[in-house]
Length: 114
Image 1 (tube, one colour):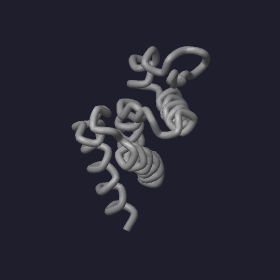
Image 2 (cartoon, helix red, strand yellow; image 1 turned 90 degrees about the vertical axis):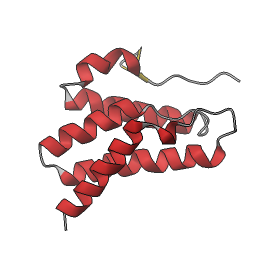
Image 3 (cartoon, rainbow, N blue to C red; image 1 turned 180 degrees about the vertical axis):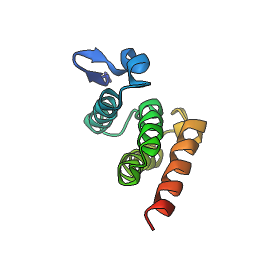
C-alpha cells in the first residue's frame, strides 16, 4: 500500500524543520499537515512529533496555555489512535522522548489554566 506524505505548500513537512524552529505559523501549519495526512492514511502512519513539540514549546513561551493544550491533546489523541491499530512491526512512536515532552507540556499547561 502506498501512503500519502505530509506536505505543506507542496513540499514535505520535513523540509520546514529549520523554519519551524522560529516560526510558529509554519510550525502549526506543519502540525495540521501531519494530522491531515495521518487521518488520510487511515491512522497507518504516525504523525511526526517534531512539529508538535516545537509548537507546544513556542506556545508555552508565549504563555498561550490554551494553545499548548489544544496542540498537545490533538497530537496525543492521534498517537493513541495510531497505537491502538499499530502492528508489532510498527514504529513505536509513543515511546519517543519527544512524545514525553509533549505530554509534560500538556500537564504544565493544564496546571497553568487552573
